[in-house]
Image 1 (spheres, rainbow over the protein chains, first blue to last red):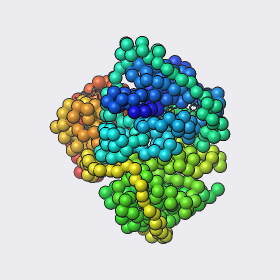
Image 2: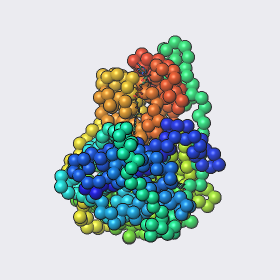
Image 3: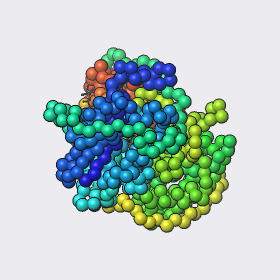
Image 4: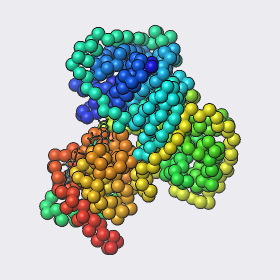
Length: 257
Length: 325
Ligand SMILES: Cc1cc2nc3c(=O)[nH]c(=O)nc-3n(C[C@H](O)[C@H](O)[C@H](O)COP(=O)(O)OP(=O)(O)OC[C@H]3O[C@@H](n4cnc5c(N)ncnc54)[C@H](O)[C@@H]3O)c2cc1C
Ligand SMILES: Cc1cc2nc3c(=O)[nH]c(=O)nc-3n(C[C@H](O)[C@H](O)[C@H](O)COP(=O)(O)OP(=O)(O)OC[C@H]3O[C@@H](n4cnc5c(N)ncnc54)[C@H](O)[C@@H]3O)c2cc1C
């Protein structure tokens, strides 16, 4: 089976966010594989181990993403592809990313494409379904279970807590929800092997795309931190006094009750 | 510049979800005096059209087909495609719900359009329609504009106030016929986990429990408090993983994103993935026995103490307040 994973390198949002010159500062920031993409990578590896084939992890990003791609290879993916459009496209949004990914994938005859359901930094959840539509294949988002039998696929989809059991068929794109699996840690031999696995680097030119074809349709005009909340009030004194005070504050100060 | 704006209404258990009305309010701002047309899709949904008009829609387009009884991306995309071809709107607003999140990127790709997802505020400033949305798991916000094509957005439930309901408003209702075919995904079964009653994403008050609640029985006082306040019970992943409650109650990045007026977090440490789902709440109360717990950093009011002592006392106090007012 020909399996592709769409992986994004993201800012670790556990870290403090600093806005500088209208941008989120990357200085000293930690970057990680988007957590939902780890589920996608793990699932891809499991599907390959069960059905045979090959897993290729693809990312649109700059050369810094090589580190995360190597991690994916160390987990067990077979190949990695970095599509570096940094110097070619100035204005990017989800339209850009999806178009670039679809252009790369269109002649790859993918049977199964896995993505994360959402990136924890950009947070739009658009890229997976957009790519499926551009490729003309069906998709199922936020899946927690995947069963493949020939070209028939049974998927469990998380719908705001309810579960949908969905039947569909390959070729297919799915987006991973937490609960799909437990992503493995790269093993030491895995890390050694990863160094020798192929990591291809492509640019916009290689995809026969021009900047105009992928230019963003939306634009960020400002990034800001939420207004600093006044220091929360930690109540003091006897617990029953605190509770009385809390109820009174909610009633008279916050006016929510 | 007046524009025609479409909204997609969302139906759950035969009724419109509140986000449908919030989408109409957002559409009014985007329309800048232009027409707002709400679309309602399903097997038998015509009777819901009047309520959309009461909430501000100028016109309602009804698309009925037996194959639209359950949501599928292909079915709904065919329905919306037909409406958009007929109406030629310049803006489109969906809710940022499971359905809206699933469908909007497909349509945006089909229409070669941008899409601003998870919008919490819409305003007209300096000749632009500006959309505000959370990024970095809610730790920052960005303001976006659309530079080319449709103004296509999804709005986070419970953030944009609906317009005042006015039953005397008049509007027209039209039908659009579609042939729904070639559905490539089929919903075989729906396992309902979510409780009847208050929809978490629409609740004004949420009492949420974490691993600190320690057992399923431990959730009982939280339920009592939520009932008393007319709210709903939520949970952290920690509580769900421990089996104290169902995953359908989960709040956070993986679970539901909520914006109630009042969020009471009991025995929840405040991991970023949890905060991503609730930090936009208007007032946050934290009850935790660890004074260093991260949840206190986002709380407006905090009580450092044992939730099993605090919650019953809270119930007593709220009861007294109810009697007095
Ligand atoms: C230098 C730079 C400038 C940018 N400028 C802007 C800007 O002005 N406005 C703006 O909106 N965005 C901008 N972006 C962000 C970028 O366009 C988005 O982050 C990207 O399109 C993904 O959107 P998202 O984060 O919402 O991902 P989501 O749609 O939430 O991601 C869902 C899933 O799609 C897949 N995916 C997402 N992104 C990628 C990727 N890059 N490679 C492979 N798979 C992926 C993953 O599987 C992921 O889990 C910029 C990025 C860079 C690096
Ligand atoms: C990709 C990913 C997605 C995730 N998505 C989500 C999500 O959507 N939602 C989510 O919630 N989590 C999510 N998580 C998990 C998250 O990281 C935390 O593990 C989880 O939120 C912890 O739950 P908790 O606060 O209940 O448990 P803990 O962190 O164990 O905290 C329990 C708290 O209870 C307090 N406590 C204990 N006893 C008492 C008592 N008697 N009285 C008062 N306080 C007491 C303790 O002091 C402690 O602070 C996600 C993680 C990942 C990796």
